Picture 1 (cartoon, one colour):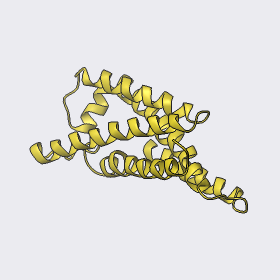
Picture 2 (cartoon, helix red, strand yellow):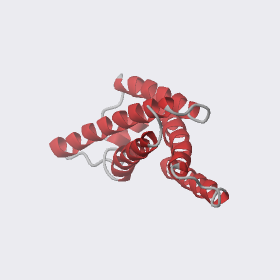
Picture 3 (cartoon, helix red, strand yellow):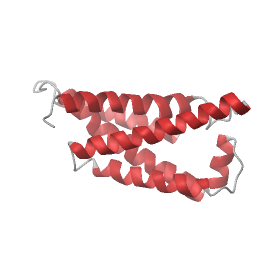
Picture 4 (cartoon, one colour):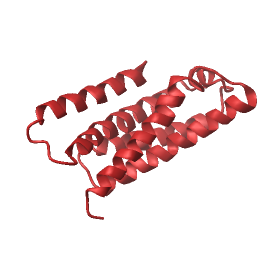
Length: 160
């Protein structure tokens, strides 16, 4: 549920921001505005929310993924999500290469998670709510692919 709220916040922020600047919108500014909202919301707030779940509700999250509770992987995933959450929020103040590093790292992390979840679906038939469905194809696949595409467009318009 929170994933959808965070995504809605990012979409509403982008739409409102674009509407406010509609007359003075320079080429490439649309991409910049999208990243300005997506990185802090998806990586920042999403990363912090995932950290809270993996750190403080580890057994419930593991059950939602269809995996056994009590595994130390939860602490490692929590730490990774905390790191990306902090980096995502720092994207509010930092731009350029910082955005690229944050978005690239977060995207690799999510696409790697997607790969693991897809393997689990194929090999064990695990279709638990956090292993398959919207979290997989929206959160772990669509969001990182969108971020990578926007970052490529953003970098194309900037000097290296």
